Amino acid sequence: MNSSGQIEFPIVPFVIGVIFLIILGPLLFKALSTTKSSLDTSLGNLSSNNNIAGALEAKDAADAIFNTGINFLDEMIIFSFVILLILLFISAFLIDSHPFWAVLWIVGCFILVIIMPYTVEALRDLYAPGLILSAAELNNFNFVNVLINNFGKFLAIIMAITGIIIYGKVFSFGDSGGRA
Image (tube, rainbow, N blue to C red; front, side, top):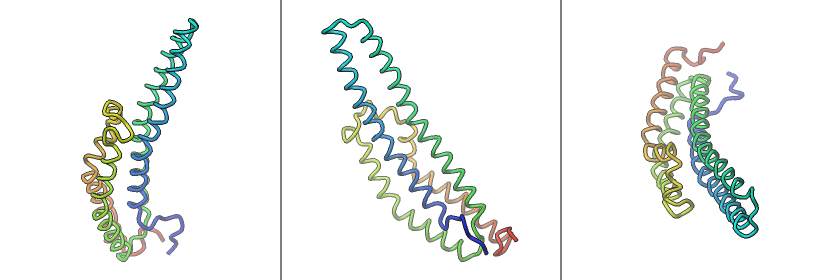
């Protein structure tokens, strides 16, 4: 049985990847907003003190770029979540289907269920208004807020779908996993 290129517990890297993206969002947002506020201050000083004609236009252009970047962050998290989900399902189809691996998958899911409430609480603390971002800034992360509030449901649905795939492989193909 050749298991090269396979992930033993595909749902664990998926959850780690999603949590990494959720943590990365506010950090990137804070980096962008810090840069923007410094730029706005500099351009505002240029326009008011020296009456430089293009400073206000430059400030408006910087605001437009910043707003596009903020929307891009949430969309990037959505896109990455979907890609991780697709890779998870692909790996669920490709893993070995021996019952031993199915039992290990169940154990891995059980451990995730035990750890997830603590992880979600830490993510809620990270997204608490005032810690990194203000309440107004947090409104830009609509998908992340939905994902954090419903993470248990997302995880249960994903575990059920991958479990059905693995169960079907175990009892349809035996221990060969559909490969010769």
